[in-house]
Amino acid sequence: MLSVLIDPDKYDLPSLLRLIKISNEANIDFFFVGGSLMIGGEINQTIKVIKDNSDKKVVIFPGSPLQMNPMADGILFLSLISGRNAELLIGQHVIATPYLQKTNLEVLPTGYLLIDCGSSTTAQYISNTMPIPYEKSEIAAVTALAGEYLGLKLIYLDGGSGAKNPISTEMISAVKKTISIPLVVGGGIRSADEALNAYQAGADMIVVGNILEKDPNLLFDIADKRYHEYS
Ligand code: 1GP
Image (cartoon, rainbow, N blue to C red; front, side, top):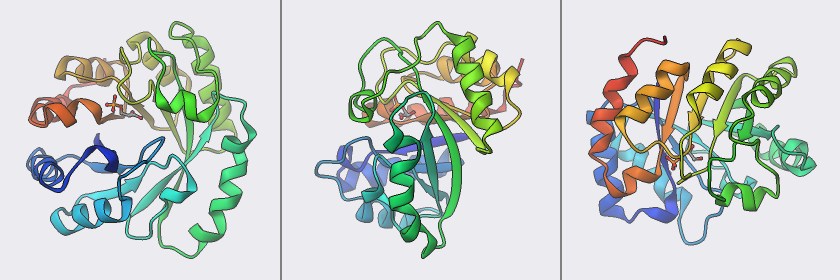
């Protein structure tokens, strides 16, 4: 599957409408909406524009509980299991839960792993956690399995938005072989070849955001790669 990540800070209305149109034509699977830090963007408005112009499901990828919104279809209930920041393992979840309980959002318990992909990212800085080193595939694999054993339903390997390099195929493959729940991979995917590499290594879903802010038409080539087999 393929998700398009929209950071409300990065789009004005015309560019958002253009990306939604291309996403519909490329038949993506989901919109993810959110950001590690939101400064001027209006998540409410962004979700409303998507809902008014697409039938695709909208999933919140929250940088904080402030980004929860009842107009979306679901929310990644992220536990940052690569880090040791208790706030992002359970603290913010407790704050969010009374609100979530009153919405119809589908809650998707997600083991979130930040990986060091060659550059410091906003996600690493804001979360105040140390990412898993790029080459330590075995640490990523056992961390992901611990997340599965804790009952999480998805594992998300993320290099952070705009990462210098995508997650290595070695790490994707090591995690895929170790877990039995779906694997989401994102961060620094900038070409159809990199998307293909991630799918072939075992990603069940990839998330693409940053490059589409510059070149939304690339989505057509990336979307085609979904149909390649896991090898
Ligand atoms: C970031 O995985 C997402 O959290 C997507 O990354 O913006 O680099 O595509 P990019």
